[in-house]
Image (cartoon, rainbow, N blue to C red; front, top):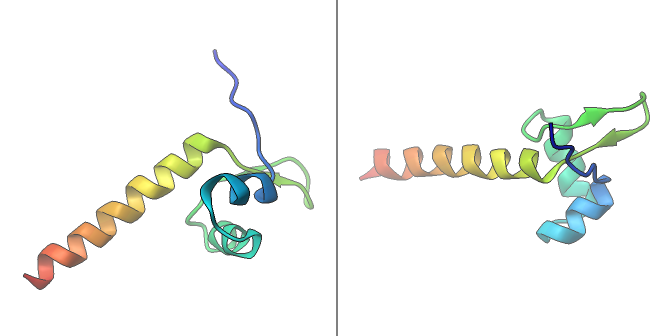
Length: 68
C-alpha cells in the first residue's frame, strides 16, 4: 500500500493557486476531502484535490449542457 503525502491547507493552496481561505471554505462545505488528525489539525492529499476537480467539472459540464 502506497502512502500519500499529507498537505496542510497552506501547502495545497500554494500548489493549486487558491488562497488558504478558499481551501478552508471547500473543506468546511464538505466539497474537499481531508484527514482529521485532531480537532485542530486537518490535512489534505493531492488525490483528494483531483477528485474534487473531477466532481466540480462534472457538475459544471452538466449545467452547461442543460442550458443548450
